[in-house]
Every structure is written in C-alpha cells, then in structure tokens.
Image 1: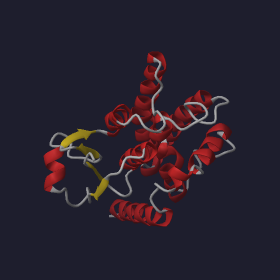
Image 2: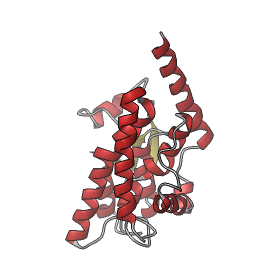
Image 3: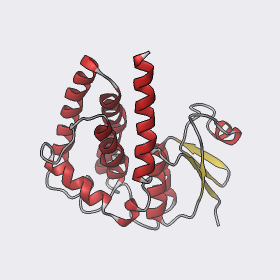
Length: 224
C-alpha cells in the first residue's frame, strides 16, 4: 500500500480541502497536525522549504505542495471514486479558472472584510458583495458548482460555506445571507449536509473559540 501523509492544520480550510478529496477517493492517509502559527516542524520545512505552509501531501516520500495542486494530483493519481475535475478539456479549464478566482479574489477579500475596520472594511464589504454576486450567477440553477455532485470548485469554496459564516458572525457582519444570496445559501446547505463534508469540518465550537480569541487579541492591540 502506498504511504500517504498529509501535513495540515486542524482549522485550516486549505488542508481540509485535501482531506475531503482523499476521503472522496477512499485513500487512507496519516494526518500530521502542524501548529503553523507557533512552531513549524523540521519535516514541514523539509517538504515545503519554499512556502513553509500547509497543506503538504507526501506520497511515497515525495511532497506535493499547495492545495489546488494537491487536489489535481489526488484526482489523477487515484482514479477510484468520484472525479474532482471533468474529463473534457474545456470544462477542466473552467474549473481551474473558478478555483483560481476563489483563491486569489474571494478568500482574501472575504477574510479582509472580517478583520479590517472603518473605511477599509466598508470597501472590502463592497468588493465581497460583488464577488459573491458573481458566484451567485455562476451557480445558476445547479445544486453544486460542478452540477449534481461535489467537484473541485465546491471543495475549494469550502471557506465560504463554513469559515466565513463563523467569521462574519463574530465580526457582527451580514455580508453573506440567504436573503441576499439565495442560491449560495442553498448551496451551503447542500454542501454542508453531505456526510463526507460534515465529517471533515473542524468542530464549530473549537473554531469559533479560536477566532474569537484572535478577534479579542486584535481589538486589544488596536486599543493600545
């Protein structure tokens, strides 16, 4: 049996993406939980000397870094289980476009919306609303971004479905609501209700406590 290890962090949406993909494919793996904010293990630095970040998938001693790259590797290496990307070249190109859009535009802007203040936050809220409107239109009448079943775009959009909902509540914001974005709201419900997704989410109370502590620390630092 191939040796598969995943260096990740319990609360990271990026390493959770890889866990979902591995579970969907039925791949057995060892999870190494890295405390990336306080201590980076020698093995993590060995396997990802460039970015020094999780996730890192190690397959038979060979490291693969960056969640989007790992997801494609998992899909191509283990054919058993549902395909994360479509076979058609054009459809695959579209998946790559939207996953890049999510990682480069949506996640940073939504994150900034929750952690900024004043005019900077107002601008980020406007940008977030524009980006969410684009995703709302992309979903159209589909259950998932890829159609009737979970695909790579859905997995990459996990931050929106879970982490951002917790963050905006702690920040006292209502950027993403079912009233404003009914299709995204329905997608979130369908996505989070999938057993394999539910089983691979960080505990809500633990994640909420973690982010609350960070909000309090940020507020204390600002007050000084």
